[in-house]
Length: 353
Image (tube, rainbow, N blue to C red):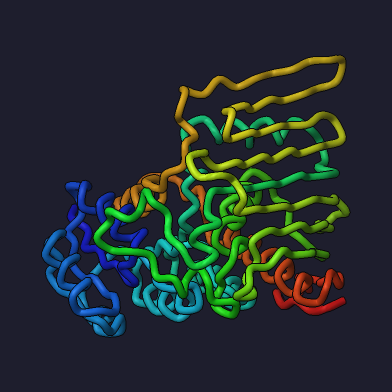
């Protein structure tokens, strides 16, 4: 079976990651690509051999395709992903899945209604050995408290600069994607979303209210995030994020989950995963060194596998939607100087408490 693939919003990350992954799969034909900028579009079309290239994503709706990667700016994800789900395609959408929680949950409903799979580009969810943590979490009883932290070396790209390790890439990141205050720019949407995608895959938690303070860049976007969270069912949590890791160092992701019968610790940077049980009992996972270093081949490969009739979606739409509503509440609370932001679960909308 051969799958025809389309890529909508072929920017820096799609060019560097998603398209090469699809191109490496013998079962995939690269049919259609879309992005703004005729020179960049032609470069990508010619380098990877796409049959069709356009600056208008709607042109692709009439083509015979099976799978779609949506890697456009955040505010475009909803309309594009919904259109291709309704066309009958399996869809991989970049994180954050949307900026608006109601739109995120509507995509989840659309995927269910059309019997298509909706995946979110959370690379860590597909790393070998991290699924062990889900089994550990199942052994610690009712979750009572969570600590979720992510920090990265991204200060330069959030403050108008660029990362040296990306400067050789032919397609450069669009600054507006990272720096627009009303377009999902800032650390929370750009980076903390990774950790939330992992947290909400590991657990069934869902935030009900968020109270946050933010550290801002002169442009108004967040560089540092600190929040307290109440989850459905009464569990509490602390979320934090920072772009302040010095250049030359890796990602920091720390998730600690405390239950009524034990706790689990994950430290991505030092590759530690530890289950603590009563009476001093401890179980430690031993991943292959380097196995948890961040990359994002997993989601695009799984998109292909699912369309071929096998594979398991480890970054489903409902995980992305729970992350979206948490991020939305965090940013809204921060803009209101830490006012508690209540997430109304009955209609998937959020409002200031």
